[in-house]
Length: 468
Figure 1: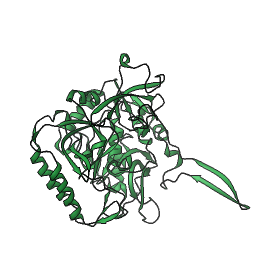
Figure 2: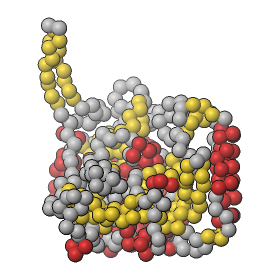
Figure 3: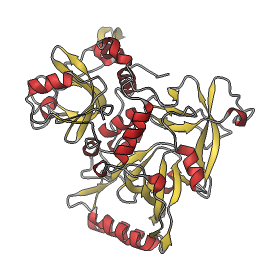
Figure 4: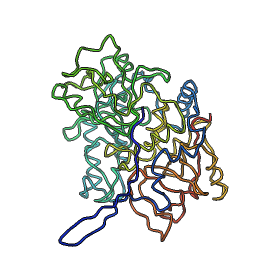
């Protein structure tokens, strides 16, 4: 049901080269307080005794949580299923033109590694929006992501950084999975490329036109993506990622990448065709996948997902064991700011894991901390008291400090451990030496930041989603 367990492997091998013998220890590198056995979910669940499989929140309570979060202004989420009202497209265009100019950095800026005149660059983008966006009264249009894509602050295909080696595309706001809904309210053609402006459920912004497809009606749109917590008529992807099978007969779905938290409706048994893209259906799930035709219209295609992939029929039960197993499926993966590199940053990592249980989490760390009824402020505690408080939490609990979130694993010999999508840190031992990691890694909370403080000292918030 849930896929791979990542293990650190110690393998001694001997290499003969030019008469010399070299012994190589092929060992997975870890933070110094992390042992090899800690690099599996089973290690941490084995410490929990009988509590690892206790269901922490039932389906109706999760549905209630989602509604509360949606209605909490500080969570900055959007009820896109009910954003039906007409609007003045001309006024929105003028606001978006002004917003592009407001987004202009005051520091040196690079596009694709080459320094640019940011004033000229952002002014050009604003002019394209001004000259090509829609005018008049309009109504929202209903679209779905047909591949993993990013939502950006301004409409451009360029990689915008603050140095020629900036590892973050600074204009990426968030990402969308395949079949994720997007409510479209504006359009712009920038340097010959079509972009659409609109809303996902957690952030507004610009999406590349070729990455979304438009539904003819709202009902068609809702029927593709809307799920009820207790339903069993859809699959949810529970591994970090996999791709649909390569196919000459279905190019729109061939090698399509699906990422954790993606939901796809199952095709009813009576509607399953005899074969699909020249394949039978034995030992496969049969799902609907949104694709895009030459005119940008959504075409619902039937595709196969092999029984061996990391998927589940309906959302998983929320248990500590399940949270940890999902978390470990990302171990060692690339960090990707806002979803760049088809990967995750720290808050998207937590969002994707909890999506597999039916949760709709806000986009970034400061918004996630505002989810109602789940906030524990530990900012005033000393390290010893904070360690005790964290040690009393269930594994799978999200922890936060400004700009970062982690999933708590457990406490061993008085040291707390977490797993997170991290950018950089200094090891917990030795001289302060902050290094870029850009990976999903296990660390103790004794690792250090550039200011010398440990992560433990920095942790200010515990969020317990099941404790409303």
